[in-house]
Image 1 (cartoon, rainbow, N blue to C red):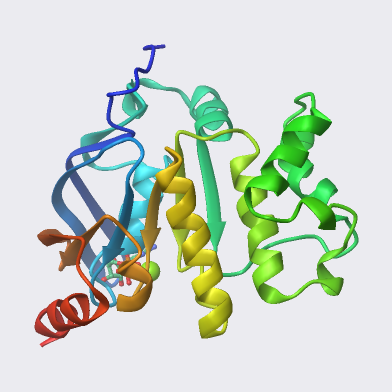
Image 2: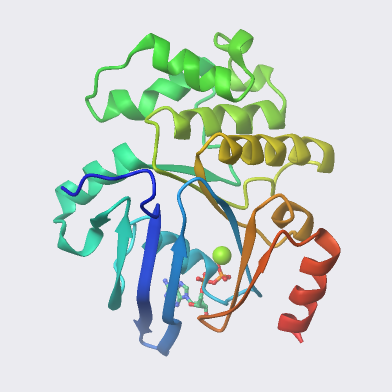
Length: 246
Ligand SMILES: Nc1ncnc2c1ncn2[C@@H]1O[C@H](COP(=O)(O)OP(=O)(O)O)[C@@H](O)[C@H]1O
Ligand SMILES: [Mg+2]
């Protein structure tokens, strides 16, 4: 495995293509996407419905293989890994956060954070779990169960679970989709804060306000990158999205 350095990009997408084939025909979901996500940056991926956002995220995270092109995560090209090594790399270098928190109601916040590592047969260090909870501001809620927490707190537990393995990249697909505006803002401020501390974050969102927390917005349309915006505010991002949806 290649050793990663501080200046190495967290994620490199090089000419990614992906075609879905089914009885009803073929769909070119990605038609040659090239992009570098620098380490320690927060990127929002936006685009109209069907533009390829979820496909891009799945391929970048090694959950799906491209038909053409390659993905490199923290210096390791995914294309050369067999399934077992890819799964292992995913567990150690990538974290995932979804719209649904996917927490187990019967487990405490602590045990929810520790669960993926336990299932993978790894040793769980109590200090690392507490550190992850600390980073999302839930130090004092380690023994709470999800039904006794707000939606925002539950999403922060899910983020702590993703951070527990100290991933090179945190992938988030609509992480604020199920939250009300003010709680959503707390979660976005947390992601911003993590990126300021050096964590690479890649977030799919359709919400311009959410995207405005990112350093850069990558716009997709019809399976291609059609633009980028750095440090855009919500109004500028919304205007760009309106153009793309026309
Ligand atoms: N499993 C699949 N089988 C066939 N077509 C798919 C599949 N997943 C996605 N697609 C198609 O690929 C295109 C991109 O989808 P997706 O990546 O989900 O877009 P987005 O997340 O931006 O809405 C769409 O036209 C969609 O219908
Ligand atoms: Mg999608």
